[in-house]
Image (cartoon, rainbow, N blue to C red; front, side, top):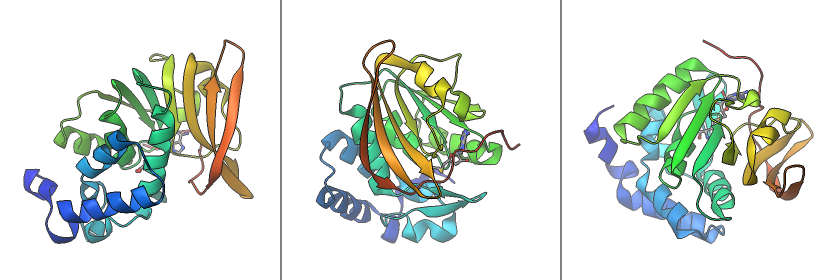
Length: 222
Ligand code: SAH
């Protein structure tokens, strides 16, 4: 991957990206900053070259290791929900994956801490983030169900993988006043939840919509 490939041609050009952004607007994404960040992010560098021509379709695509790059709509939706309470200083992302959601979010928050359990995915994602010169991202190879205690508390937490139940560690690492956007559930269906910590002991949960995410798994892969 080099600077030239970054620009993109044909199916990966700026015009193709505009089309995607218009589609997201039609689907109800309203936050202009989120739409601008998606437009500015070259999704084709986050997938294999063989799939680059499909990068601006609004669909999830395989990235290896049984994982997928998230659908642009869901990236936009989750980012919009996370930011709806005002600017965020420090955010935890669980499940770096390809790094696409990471790159979008990094443009909109002060500091982003992103954790991933599959080392080879994390390494590739880090290269892409470097190429895009997104310097406010720190990455850690760890089981994100435990959060990132050394960086906590976070005023935003976004999970790209679905646990059966929200991990206690993530709840504990959410700052009072903070917001968490997380898919929750198992084989019988998942729901996207927005959890707001309104005081030391009170967590307000809103169900947003039905979603399909890869499961949050424990342990790490080298
Ligand atoms: N937003 C990412 C989505 C990747 S899929 C993208 O657009 O590319 C979800 C990711 O979560 C996968 O890479 C998976 O390995 C990771 N994941 C699953 N369980 C995890 C855990 N316990 N800790 C950290 N990452 C996890």
